[in-house]
Each structure stands twice: as structure tokens, then as C-alpha cells.
Amino acid sequence: MIPQAFIQDLVARVDIVDLIQKYVPLKKAGANYQACCPFHSEKSPSFTVSPTKQFYHCFGCGAHGTAVGFLMEYAGFGFIDAIKDLAQQIGVAVPEEGPAFSGPSREQQRSLIDVMTDAAQYYRDQLKNSPRAVDYLKRRGLTGEIAARFGIGYAPNEWQGLADQFKQYDDEVLSEAGLVITNEAGRRYDRFRDRIMFPILDQRGNVIAFGGRVIDQGEPKYLNSPETPLFEKGRELYGLSQARIAIRETDTVIVVEGYMDVVALAQFGVGNAVATLGTATTPTHVQKLLRQASRLVFCFDGDKAGRKAARRGLDAALAHLADDKTVAFLFLPEEHDPDSYVREHGADAFQAAAQQATPLGRFLLDALAEECELGTAEGRAKLVHLAKESIPKVSAPVLRMQLVRELAHAAQLSPEETAQALGLAAPPKPPTGRFGDRKAPPPLPRAPVAPFVQKLLRLLLARPELGSRVPFDLLACLPETSERDAVIAIMDAGEDGQLIGASLGVWFEHFRDSACAPAIATAMRSIQEGLVNDDRVEDELTDTLRRLELLSLENEIKTLTGSLIRPEDQAYLQQLFAKKQKLKSGQPV
Image (cartoon, rainbow, N blue to C red; front, side):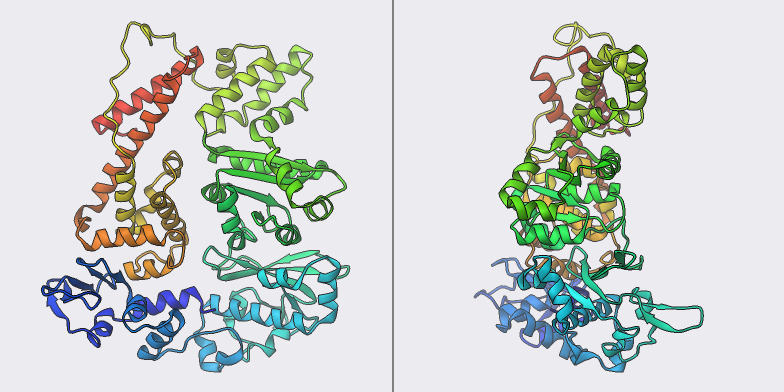
């Protein structure tokens, strides 16, 4: 497999004008070049090539793409052959798995991802040559197919085993990647020895770290890579790259505690599980996973430690909840972990248990009540006091109102009294007419959401660094479309900053063969056709976000006013109307 980073660098370095000029005569036309389209018959030129965007587009037939795509479409190359041809044209070697490109000069030029890819291949090769390690995996019930799917390997019990793969074992990049350690005496040795190796992948499928498990007895039981420029434990999840398809199919992601749990579940047909990396679940984990699915299930052992871990997961989730998302908690019988449970009961039983998991709200209130004696006034007061640390943090407004009501019932208070005790805004006196004698503000004309999301996608492709200005909560309220998913994917890809400043062609190749590719391609064609004014991108983004927020508010107001309004809903409803008026008038909210 050719590393994605190499492909992106290749597209950035190739001059698409020089490439296409070899096949089609181009003429300068302003900032771009043009010709009669090589993909359909025409008399007037409608085929344009942009040197800044590294992208070609035909206004006649719609053909479009990067240098890679041109060779595939015009010259009939396969993807790999197109990459090799471009690499040869600019005089670089294509990195591939195996020892073929391990020469010293190449060694010095590798990126961290290249080194990690090589290390993963070394560990896989070592597994094949270690009957003891293979026997361990078989005893754990793993098949060769599932081991290959997750790239599982073995680090031999040697102090400098990686020296067989990396001829320049003293290269500083090995230390920077977390593969080797240098002791106080200056001696360098492998970080991982005599361990089953689990590669940790990023969102693009690149190996960025490893988790190593001891085969027999030893401490620590699991050893993870240290944090590196590639790897931050609080942001990454084991198995997410392999689980994406199953997550989309089930619209559910299950978080378990260990690598073996993920692998065992996948082997038995539960492919939508991921694991944290030796750390508690973080808000970043929750935010990332709720972008993947509308239902997030934390799966823990039913013992005291499992419930403690569940509380940490709950705390991490509070600020990222949405009313169209579900977070739940599955507690297995104390004698089981996910690995043993799925082997004994099967995938269907495990998935059914996940569907019946305890919703976050119920788990939160039950956990608080466990610490209180609700038969006494003091116990009920303590319940409300404890809830002040969590319920106000709930970011989903309707869920928060529901929790206040349930808490009020348990504490034998009114919802208004409970809200005030929690430090939430107390509901005002009910207005008149339907909302009192005052009329509700007239609704805005309802515009379709799709054009605004399409415009948002075009703007972010033109200026990906502006993705940080897009509130994810706003996107979560919009209908699920390929354009919305593409916007989220661009925001995800821009989080690590590696693609910020890259040409449109690099972004296009980044999403090749992904579910977002069609929406990305359509947006890029629109950019080529002049639907984005480069000088007004920031202003247009601000206006588009304001319009989308107005539409989102309208939908929420319509939902609330479409049913019986309770007094405790009035404060929130009036807040929505006030926010809507500010947005309409262009005031900050």
C-alpha cells in the first residue's frame, strides 16, 4: 500500500499543466490554461487547467480531477501505475511495503508515517516466524484472517530487533516515532520486545502508533507508543479505521476497553467496536465518535471499576450531547468481558444487549441516586446538590429539560425550583395568547437546507482552515446528506493541520474512493465554475452559518410549538426567539 502522505506530497509537487501539456496543447487564459476537451468532441475550448488548484475541469462534459485522475482517464492507467508514472516523472521512488526501499539515502528522507509503516510490516513478518506468538493468538481464538485485517504482528524478544529492518538504527526518526529508547548510558534499544503488536491507525489508515501486549506474565500488560508528532492518545481510537463501514451500516459505535475486545468482536461479526488507548474516554473521543454515528454505546464490565470508567465516559460526553444523538452504557455480567461474552452468546446477542443499553440520562440519575438516601429531606437535597456538577453541562437542551423534570420528581420539587437550584435560568411567567396576549414572532420563510450546506462545502474546500469556525452542533441539527458528511470530513481532515494550505487537487486525492468523494467532486466543479468568490469567502461563510442557524432555530421552534407547551419550556422558547431576532438583524449571539 502506498502511504497516503506520499500521494498527497506527489500531487502537490507535480505540475499538472506540464503533465497535461504532454498530451493536450494548452493555451494561457488568464490565471488558468484551456484547450478543447480531450474527453469529448467540441469546437470551442471548455477544458480548463488550474495551476494553483492543481485540478482540471471541463465545462462541457464535466470531466475533472487531478494529475492522477488525468493519467487514469486519458492514458488508461490504473491508480498504482498512475502514481508510479508521476513519481518517475519528478524523480522520486514510490514507497511500498517490504525491504525494497530500505536503502540508506531513502532511510534519511522518510517521514514518520513511512517509518511506522515499515515497522508494522516488520512486526507482521516476525509473527509469521514465531510459532509461540501464533499459538498465543490461536489460544485466544483469533483466526489468521482477522489478524491480517488488523495488521497484528509480533515484536521479538530482542533488544535491537528493529535493526534488521532499519539499517540506520541510530536514525533519530526512530526515536521520534517512539520505536526505540536511548538509556542514560547512550545505548539504544527497541521499545517493544516479546509482545503481540497492534497497529494503531489514523483516520486515513496510516500507522501512527502501536499497542503491545505481553504473551506470558509481565508488566505492564499493555504497552503503548508514547505521544509523538503523529500520535496523541486523547484523540485517537483503536480500530476506528477498520470499523467505519460497520459504524455507518449500524449507525452505532461501541466503545470497549481493550484491543483484544475490538478484534474478538470483529471476528464474531460485531465490526462497529473501537477502544480507547490506555486512557479514559476524552471529550475529543466523544465528539469524534458522535460525528460517525447517531448512537454511541460505552461497554464496560459490570464491576466497580467498570462503573467508575463509565462515569468518566459520561463526564466526557456531557458537553457534546445533541438531542438527535443517543449515548448509552452497557454493563456486562461481572464474569464477562466483551471478548468472552461474544464467544459464549454470539454477535446477535451482543448487538441486542447494546441496543438495550442504559441511556445516559437514566444512568446519570441512577448513579447520583446511589449516593443519596431519597427517603429523607437531606438525601433529596444532596441529590440536587450532586446534580449541579453534571446536568447544567448537558449540551442537548431538550434532554437537559427532561433531566430537570426527572430530577425534580425524585427530589420532590417543582421543575422551576429544581432549575433554580441547579443554577439554570428559571422559567418566566407564561406570556399571553397562544404564548399570551403577545404574538409570537412571525416565522421566517422556510428555505431548503440543501443549498446552504452545498455552499458551505464549497467555501470550506476553498478555505479548509475556516473549518474551525463551523460549530459541529449546528451540523448535527441538519439533515444527513452526503454534503453534510463531506463538510464534517473536511473538518476532521483539517484538525491535524497536515492538509491546511494544500491545493484543491491534494484535497481531492485525500478523499478519493471515500464515501464523500462524489460530494467533494461536485463542490470542486462548482469552484472551478466560479461559484466561489475568493475575496469574499470569510464573509460568505459568516452569512451561510447565520442562515443555517436560523433554519435550525426554526426547526426547533416548530418542534416545541407543535405540542403542548409546559411552563418550564417557555424560558427556553423565548431564548430561541430572542436568538432568532438577533440573527435576523445581524447582531452577535
